[in-house]
Amino acid sequence: MEVTLRSVTEDLFLNGFLPTLSLFGITLLLSIPLGLIISLGLMSKFKPLKMLVSAVVWVIRGTPLLLQLIVVYYGPGLIWGGKLLERPVAAIAAFVINYSCYFAVIYKGGIESISRGQYEAGQVLGMTKAQIFFKVVLLQVIKRIIAPMSNEIITLVKDTSLARVISVYEIIWVAQDYIKTAGLIWPLFYTAAFYLVFSGLLTLLFNFCEKKLDYFKS
Image (cartoon, rainbow, N blue to C red; front, top):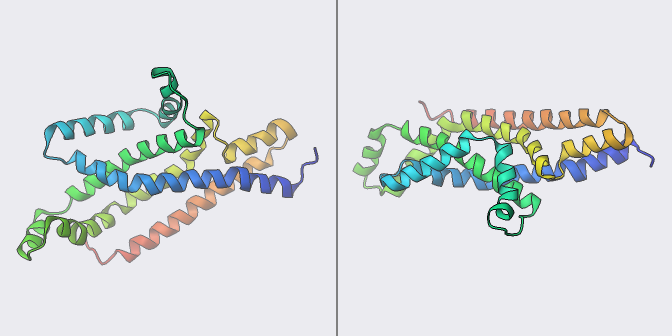
């Protein structure tokens, strides 16, 4: 089989980059709001709920994502004798659960950093608890958590490569195929360029967001 620069580039883009980008985007889309919900559980005044959510977050943050991918994919079949999840679905589920828990802890720290006086001021103005949270607190929380959130999101870009452990076809897998079948090493440098460019663009985006939120003074 003749291997050309064009064929390798197209294969890396269609079969490698697009699935990687899809896993990244869906994980981010689902884990950011889910992380906020979990953070509310972490701060709940209902002790049983708080203890349960805290235990789940502790387990997820204390075990490797690699292990969680294996458990989510093989777990249904080994534990309940059920049908295995589709590989992309299992990867998305594991990533969303993992990153939601990390985001939840970041949200919790940001929410708890807002002074009690902000809530009291909102109450004096006749605002409801929901209005105070979304119109007064949340925007300030976003300003305070954008740096740690950006670190986690950039880490997510690189962690997508772990999906290959359950045979999800992603960009490093494609590059490795060319090493095995065609004896080519340079596609791996393409994958490195992808991660560097992707991470660089995200860094610029988060720096822009931080500047836009500068009117919130800590």
